[in-house]
Length: 247
Length: 226
Image (tube, rainbow over all chains, first blue to last red; front, top):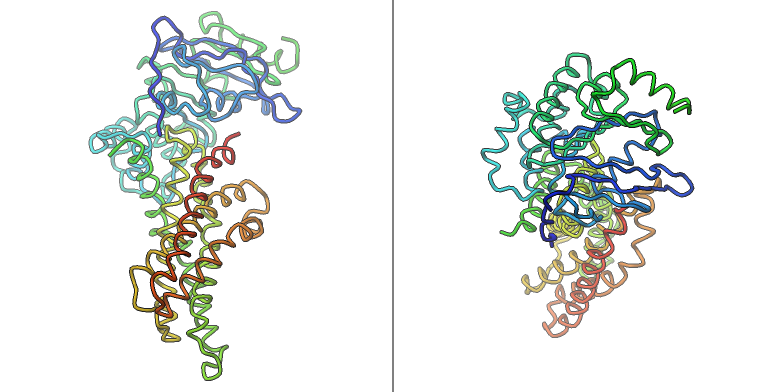
């Protein structure tokens, strides 16, 4: 049965990683990562392939058990079976999590059902409208373009009004136009007061949206800065130094 | 309806909708069921063999092989677009995901049983006895036990490279009680034996099913959690 809802505690960060470690056998994918994010903060995490970014995001989503350390949502530790905390988190990945043979509307109805939502009759059309996909409501997902599927996946991730949104390489496979459309939607997300963590290779887009940035290499955060203290050239320089092991 | 039941119902509805739309598992299971009936029809000289005595065995052989064919693909549909991650990171308790998969598999195998009963009646004119409710109870309870075990092990086999090849090797030993008690009870119903001769088998099937469902509900999280 579902666990009782974890009550948010005032004065605590919305999302906190406390010395998170995740090992896969002898390989350490996430190495003592810590950060705290308040309401409405946007953290972009950059890093090369295999840096452990996706593992970090899966830990934050409660989909992967940490080897040590913990994730806290509004001060409450997120355990692997904590379904109530998961209801406060939305995930957008380069994988859509959508079923190709179902229509856009059917996919959202299904995910609404997983969240136990009751007002899906009005909520689903609203979310489709939010991402500009009303006219695709009855289209099977496998007939949609990659960019359209990604917008639908964003509607899925936001269907239950999560306070925390986790983005895993959301621009993968998108052309320039679709990438720009998604960027607009993510900007609106940031301005809507949600706490967001995005892992991406795309330095430009990640920096544009972020309040804070971090660079993860071999599992560790080797560089962290506030957006205000950094420009695109500075980020690129820092990224290169971090990846080359000079940070 | 509680949130938990709504969550389970959403998964069952999605699974059955996808199956109706693609027909992937039903076509394979139904095709095998009818094929077995046709092959046996031509392979066995019904003048020499008393087919009615084989009825329960043939029915259960068809259910087990046909069911196995479909159950092995239980988690295939969740691989598409990484949907399994969407499911596992949703607020649905893991036991809810397991139970939903059991329910949707139960519906599919029951559909195959109806096809098998019809096919064997058509080709061999089997007499299914005079206790249809008791037959439904035996088939229902045994099928639930069968899918409880198979669903859990299809989650295990989905995570290995051997996939469906591994499934029969893993589960046939565990299905021995279903086979023994299911075939025995079904055979007695087909022979129109007194109800008291079937009750014992039905109770044993029920006990097996309760144990299988309980174990599956508890163990599923260890299968899918990383």
